[in-house]
Image 1 (tube, one colour):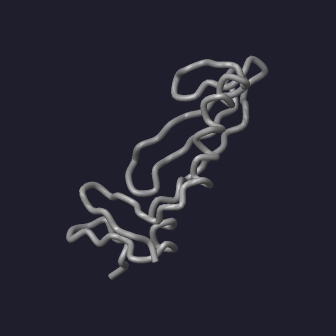
Image 2 (cartoon, rainbow, N blue to C red):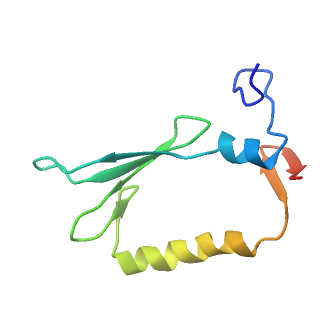
Length: 101
């Protein structure tokens, strides 16, 4: 049985590699066709939650929220750079807290 199985009993990842593989985001791209704008579809690695990012010359629409590229940069860049600064090797999955090796 795969240690990353989602069927009960749940088994949480024991190594950093398993943890990163378990929550890997699935990315799908659709080109523009006719009146439909191009989009990226991002799906969760462990469930069926998803978010759509539509984009065109006016700027991206993320999860139904329109905004200029500069506005999205202000929001997401600090979040993406924060991961580099974190030195803690702990992660949480529900109520379970583990330390990465």
